[in-house]
Length: 120
Image (cartoon, rainbow, N blue to C red; front, side):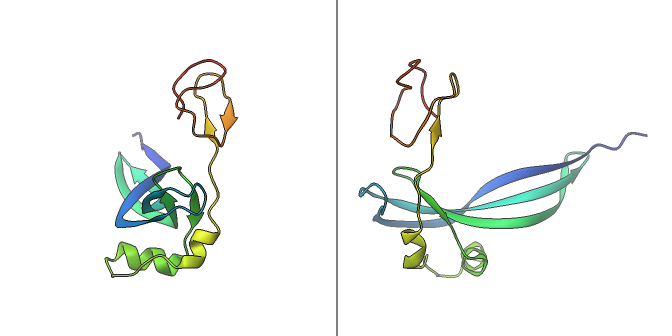
């Protein structure tokens, strides 16, 4: 008998959108909340979710910061809670990497300046 088991990392966008000025790039954008978790599956059926982490990301430049677990769980439960302002102060811009040549930058290039491939 064969058992097919796996532990995978998954990311799920929660129902939260707040339009605000991005502290990193200065543009107006939506703050979106994501839950990242590990999932144990057996026979391709998810059984257990564990190691939940929450983060807020700006859709304008991709800057993000970790959320306190209590705040993330309240947003996930649908409570009318907002992201605390001190979380926005901790935001950092993520590096973008070219999938073709591996060039990494924090700039908002649409195409890689080295190979011309679309950036991720």
